[in-house]
Image (cartoon, rainbow, N blue to C red; front, side, top):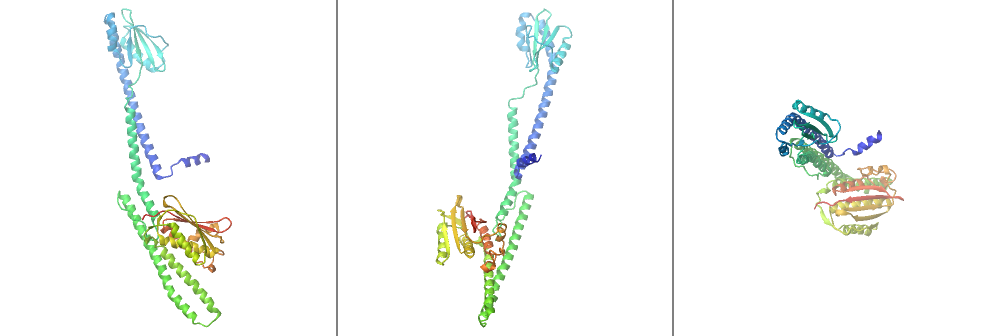
Amino acid sequence: MKALRAAASRLRPRSMAARLYLILFAGVFVAHGLSFGLLFLERYESSKTMLLGSIELDVATAVALLDRVPAAERASWLPLLERRTYRYILGPGLGGGELSTGTSREITGLIASKLDGRFSWHANMVSTRSGRFQLHVRLHDGAPLTIDITPSILPIASWLPFVFAVQMTLLLLCALLAVRLATRPLARLARAAETLTLSGGATRLEEGGPTEVAFAIAAFNAMQERITEHLRERLQILAAISHDLQIPITRMALRIESMDDLPERDRLNGDLGVMQHLVRESVAYARSMHGSSEPPCRIDPDAFLDCLICDYQDAGKTVTLSGHVGKQVVTRPHALRRAVSNLLDNAIAYAGAAELTVQGGGRQLLLISVLDRGPGIPTHELEAVLQPFYRVEGSRSRETGGTGLGLAIVHQLSMVLGGELSLRNREGGGLEVELRLPPLSG
């Protein structure tokens, strides 16, 4: 039972559009099929009533006519008396068994009642598959007359299946159009939600369409504006506090410099250094949220990264570059430089050296990876380290210069660049951070 339920769950359509397609098409198909079936049944009953209501009179009239015309003229009358379901044969006809179908017995009884004993007759079955049977009548001059009967309702017109197929196609197209009109606003809302950024760079949806859709779009736009304004306000507060803290920190540093050479002086200088670093990182984090204001432009990633690596090497840092893109990409260069620099700084701070690899994918996709051989990050904390002010105890502590904002800044910059940031531990120790950047519209 569980296996059947699991199989049914796998076969069940997942998307709303597929489910609506299935419901509408199944409902339309069943309703149209029932209508067609009832129409066919009514046609069958009408044809059967017409057949049974006229055959006895027609046959009785034809037998009386053939009985009165001269024997030499009877053959010329046969084509005129022939009908779709029965015809007349001058002769004994075919032999066979007793009547075995209800229709044949009913028709024979009706014809016999109209003959009214004026003619001798008998009937036999010719084919049970088609229901064909023959009624043998002896005319008054002794000539045999056979009535060959094959009961059938009126055949279906050749164009009727074509019309049915055209109707189902039109109904299916209407169902597809209805589902598309119903699900397209949801798809627009989903795409707009994906483009919503903390810097307020999401596109405002155009309000229009049916009343319910326009109301939903207006509500989404209002929600988007409130979220963006709220986040901007929080970031402005963070930036303002971080900026204003630099002034008293500087004053405190000047006062400490005027103090006598005491053991507390070095400890106070260390604490002020940590505070200054934290303030600078907070300001950088706040600025990273507004990186989408930088216009995208086309750059050569190979030359761009080579220049960045040369700056680190000139400063005496152990940094290597490998890989080749071989084509230009559209991105935000200043945001990209800050993101890669933060990753390199983290790797150098915790491992002493960094490896930068780059490769290009399809449609201007850019893959940048920064690798180190440092202590790494516990697997269960790989996602948590992307949150602001989160520090891994032991491996990445405040003593190494960490504030918990380095990877958070890179994470925000990756969203500004329209990309994704992923972390994983390397085999043999160390951390690999991959920045996957799709092309931006210029």
